Length: 376
Image (cartoon, rainbow, N blue to C red; front, side, top):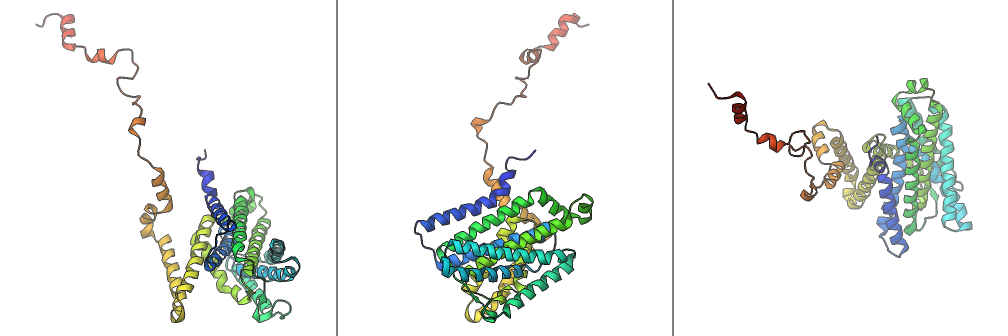
């Protein structure tokens, strides 16, 4: 039987993101002004969460190693950015142009996901990683060597910047959509088939699961959401440059998934938020000659987090001091003495044929003297 809080546990992160989005939306619509750096940070966090959750569908739940996620994001950024650059003069820089660009970027990335997934998903392990890595590098090279009239070439594609006051709200609404779609898929029969393929592909085949179909479904859906993140990136920046979507960025997205825990949607959300915040803050603090220390400190912090999460010697400390233990302590309260009921097993309330008070008051010595007569 399921525990009463089991369903709530699976939707807690969804409710938390929705609550934060609602509060920030109300504050924005009522005239509150936020710092530009904070708004830009929120946009980057939303983009990172979408990328991490979508890649977790392939790496965490399907169990396949993909290193081309930045390539799918690049396709969405360029195609969505190009569509927005063409539509904004006609429709204005509003929700209509944004939604059309979003559909174009996500659709283009999904088509690339299908085109790469059909031949590539017959491979496994390192071979699949090499193919997806090659796809990302090919896409980056194609856009980098395009003509200035088409996609800007080496200088990049100029894209319209959406209003900073509202873009982060649209971004977090897309985060909610991504989390909802991925979580509902994983908790459905299709998601159980995907995880069965991860656990044992041969056993899944023997049970009649169409392995190619479900691999392609996960790969295409993951690529489509990467395209959504790319469109958000194009609207968050004035220029889209292909150098941003290189091999290192794919590794960074993979680190978000691994750091949060394989197959954990809340973990992917937390790690994406943490890594993006660390990267942004280190870039803001370490300026000038200290900028060379940014990557060093960033890597050292990530290594420390990984060691903390996996070191066997720290297991007792992790079990004692974590969010679950803290929540358990907060829920635990001391019993109220006035609410304590009498013990139903006490000797004076147990129903018997003989009154317990009467039995204990019997003088056994006198009864024996009366029945047996005088002592010899």
